Amino acid sequence: SKKAKDLLYGFAEKQLKSLNESIEKRGVATLNPILEVGDFSEKIIESSEKLNVNILFAGAGEKLGDNIPLLGSNAVKIIKKSNKPVFIVKNDSPLNINKILCPIDFSLESKRALKNAITLAHKFNAEIIILNVYDLSDLFPIRNKIKMDEHLEYLQKNCENELNEFLKDFTYTGLNVTKEIKQGKPSTEILKALKRHAIDLLIMVTTRKYGINKILIGSVTDKVIKEITSSSIT
Image (tube, one colour):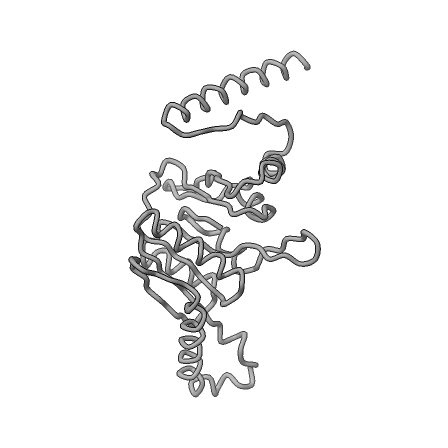
């Protein structure tokens, strides 16, 4: 009923006002709270476009058994549909960033991701792990698999050269940077690196634009966000 909707809207307004005042008391400048009615993820994205924000923050959402976090449906929708950087934060976890993982594929989008990683590493005095993964199954047809061993050393060296060339445009003065090249499925190796290095923050490319304002999420990112348990900016 209209009365019930009005009561709910009024309650939400009071909660937003209280939250906004709490943030301001901590010395953070705020705009007036926005209260919208409709699909959560769609309204978040619309508001970010209207305000021309630099970054979106969202909670990870759901949890599996043993208190293992899982990205909620709204968080996934925001990641997939937003053309703004999205920072996903695990619930009930303090933001303590000591190690940042930045997977790259030598694309222009990867350059943007690494630039963000460097900026945040300076802010938090964090270590950066730069990861590149090459997948042999994408490079050789089945009939040539028997000859793969002959090419592994060449491929590793070629990836090292390409990585060094890619990184020439960046400055890491004052930062602790580790470079890693792994062979395997990119999504699998990214998830392994998160655990191996106890990563606090994952920064990776999620979208590329094709045509006018069309956003496409890559299969690697799609697989990672379905399984990730770290905080991440994408």
